[in-house]
Amino acid sequence: MSILCFGEPLMRLSTTGHDRLDEARSFNVSYCGAETVAAVTLAQFGESVVFATKLSDGRLGTNALMTLTRYGIDTSRAIRSPERMGLYFSERGLSIRPSVVTYDRSGTAMANASHEDFDWDHLLNGIDTLFFSGVVPAISDEMHRACLEGLREAKGRGIHTVMDLNYRGTMWHTNANAQRKIGALLPYIDVLIASDDDVIGYENANVAEDGLFDWCLSWAKGMLADHSLDRICVVVRQTDRYDVASIRGALVTRDATRLSRTQAVALADISSCGSVFAAAVVHGLKSHWDAQFIIDFATMSSAFKATIYGDYSSATETEIAQLLAEGVKPSIRQ
Figure 1 (cartoon, one colour):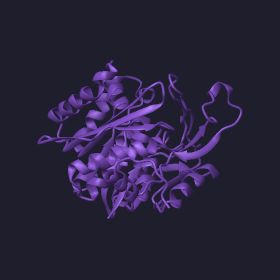
Figure 2: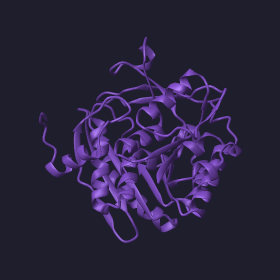
Figure 3: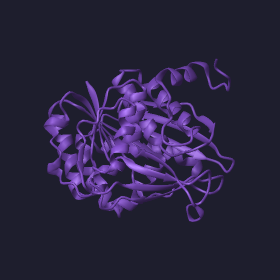
Figure 4: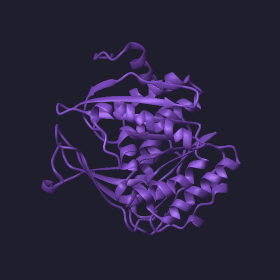
């Protein structure tokens, strides 16, 4: 049985090094997006992955699908249409300067899609886990309805459902809109995953750095009390002015709370660390691992990605498990 990742691949144009977007004269091009990164990470962990989307039928859309197929992901359920490819521009921060992401995704195939474009009876055939992020229902009312219909179909078939909150304020426009529409999806979600940025944005909160982890933990417990979720996983990523990232995760159920160790790494690129964390949680759940190992594995996977420039960590399950078993010791492996 396979994991179905439902989302929109995007073309990423990133500045060179730590150049600012305003001064950029050239860009590095790659194909990614939250669900794309999760799908690739899951495939690298050895999972069978299917990707469903509606995507430009032009060369850029083909390149995006070729990126997925390169990692062994089944793209046969992708729908092609004449609309444009979605883009985003990425400026990697440094020290006190944060990273900046600028989206250009209006008028894309997914933005113009109808909920009727997605035949969930076909899409869910041979699937045991449905994964998507909060970006997808934020694209349009039609995509929100598509997600809701997919979740209902999945629950009716006993398919495990996982959502990465992945809150984007510019897409939801208001917190009230986000909470209302995400609230409509939550009764059909088994596992909710979120980063500190997602939680703060979703709640429109202002939280002190030294209390951030405990605040996110409290939020997760509150969400479990208010909704029928099986579990919530949160990851908190804090970076100092010397570009040392401290990453810690928690897996919360009604019966217990599992906390990972804090993983401190020299930061190369914080982008996609949340999507890698989400994919690692899904992989751990599908592998029926102990809850403590799942959150340790997911946190280490996110930390490992933080040391890699670009979108994908290229880490295998064995690499992450070895780091957990040995402790983090810089070395040369031969």
